Length: 276
Image (cartoon, rainbow, N blue to C red; front, side):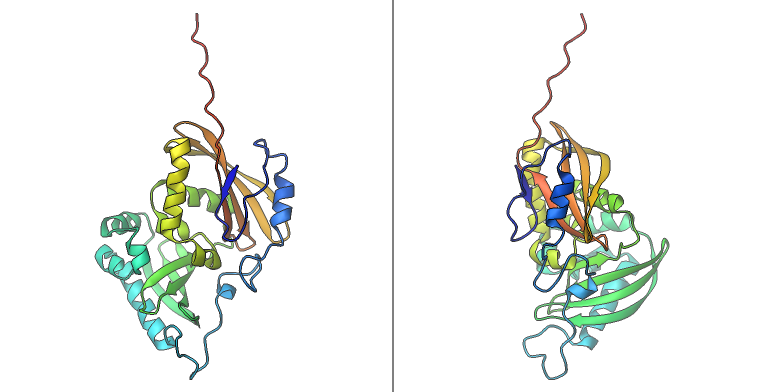
């Protein structure tokens, strides 16, 4: 049995551990709608409705000016590497799963932010998404920031279209293993982030480790199969008690649209008989 992190989806059918039925599984998932009106191949920007016209903002999120100002404040905190200010800009949901010390730890692993350009603002009923092009010490990266009605950061996603799917899946699992659930969530497509909070990811990961033991390392990553609009990656992961596969499904933009944890992990293998 496996535990799926795809909201509204039932558990996948049993899959042989050797992966012989992986291709059929991926093809079966290929045409599934991920969000009302959104298909797997669409990018993060397409997942958010276009900004409402003037005069239609009653009950909506931020205005364009408010969203741009909030995004500028958030990026300035990243540039100055101020963990306390960065934490203060988190939504309550993100603050509940983080701390200034955790933010500081994450910042130490990130490239320096040298500058940025705000590209677009897309408004929704409860959130607003701002797209920005970041100039970092590692090059240019496109970022989507999701802001709540108070202008606080409630989620984000980097454009990883040009990355290897295996690298994205492995980095996602490693962020989970470090307890960086906000960073791990950033690998999810924005529609999936709407359903899966960092607290949900934390609960699922902790539930998994109650059966498997603590995370040890990623053993290997296999790009198992690909359909027209999705790809299945197996992350073979060693825990204290067992080694098992975590299934990660990505769309054509390398956004994670589904994660599947084993409910009944492989049983521990018996120890070898001592030499006589």
